[in-house]
Image (cartoon, one colour):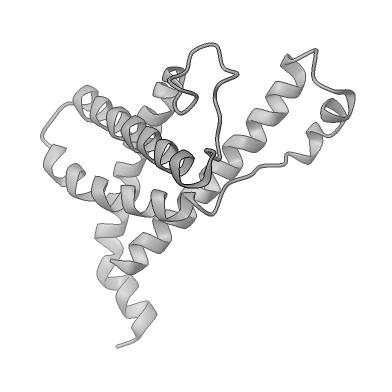
Length: 156
């Protein structure tokens, strides 16, 4: 379980770094009011994440593993809706908690046209839907490879 937590935490970080790098590149073209240096820096594809996110990604994915096993007989639509709901709930709860504990949330969507308290963006629902359904595939691969991975790590 610890190995899966570490794997999912790292995978979450990688996905977030790629997302923020691609988004900053896209925004540099789309936003004519962006500072000149921001527009010229776009080719660096700088992505970022937060240390706070590692346990959040890992723990959420472990919860979703159990949910995925129970949701298998349901339609893609139902499963996707479940993943979007869980992702929004976790993102909101974590952001709210971090804001209470540290005085601010590492992410702030207040600038977006549609947001809920600056903590979640409903227009990200398709992203969470896609990632939730992609997670199912990752989970299935880990289940199939589980015994082989244990042997590879610990030896016979």
